[in-house]
Amino acid sequence: MAGSYVQRMIFGCLLALGMGTSAQAGNEVNVYTERQPQFIQPVFDRFTKATGIRVNVLYSQTDLVDRIRREHESTRADILIAVNVGRLVEAANADIASPITSPIVDENIPTTYRDTNNLWVGLTSRARVLVTPRQAGNQMQIESYEELANPQWRGKICIRSGYHVYNTGLVASMLAHHGPEYTRNWLRYVKGNLARKPQGGDADQIAAVARGECSVAIANSYYYGKMLDDPATRKDASRVQIVFPNQKSTGTHVNITGVVLMKRAPNRENALKLIEFMSSNEIQHVYAAVNFEYPVGIVWPEMLRSWGEFTSEHLPLTVIAGYQDLAKQLLDEVAFDD
Image 1 (cartoon, rainbow, N blue to C red):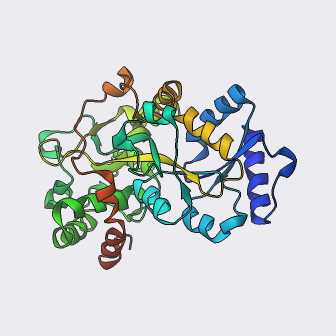
Image 2: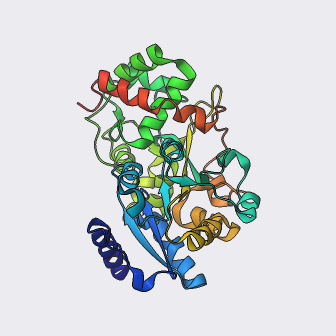
Image 3: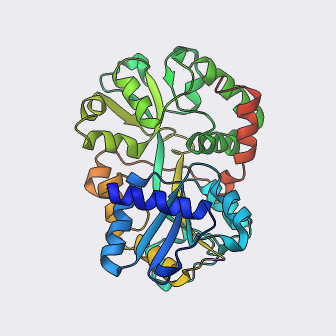
């Protein structure tokens, strides 16, 4: 793991200096990713072992689409991995993407999770769930995102920054279903119900519920699985339960991690091999077993089904992605993080 970290740092430095790695050209692929390394590195390690092709990783939570656009013809990026459909659509519209033409990918990934012009492909999905104490009484039951605005939750909600892509996606979903006036008021009431200012990551929100710091949190489903799997956090995870919201109405909000092939990819053939590898049934099982995400190309494993079956929201992800900018505007208007 230390070697992988050093490799990522060296690659990042080379990119910053505008330098290539021509001595190894032809036996590598360069990945720009918003995905945290611990969630994706096991897949890259398997790919290298299977093919001999080294995966150089540049991880950043800044705007990688804009970075690739600014790098233009000098970019070293072969593929972009994004953790939000809004970012995938942004890349497709930024003239940096190339169609992913592959019968293997077409067979492995349902059309629901592919761009109509093949400019991006979804690899995994995750649900934006509510987390409550496992022994919650009837007065603490909650079934929908809309209920988060109710007065009974005043001082009881924990959430990470509203501007994180996981939450802007949820706000965009609310906009798609309810419109701006309702969503603006909903955000105001949710902010008023917070137990503390938005902070930390999703795992921190789950831990806060377990420790009694709040009564309900908003988090991605796979963080619950990761915490159950880690001895250091298993106790906290065992004290909570996840709720799939809106099962009686619009369905639970889901989002995807997906991949974009770069138009100026210097290692195009290797990049396509990696995309095909990531779409395979074998790696779909890895996503489920290692990352606790919902695979998009295979039946969910029993472990994920044990959390409960659910109906995802009915609107196409691309429709929801169209509301991302307005979502950020409303977050500004209500000063959600302040």
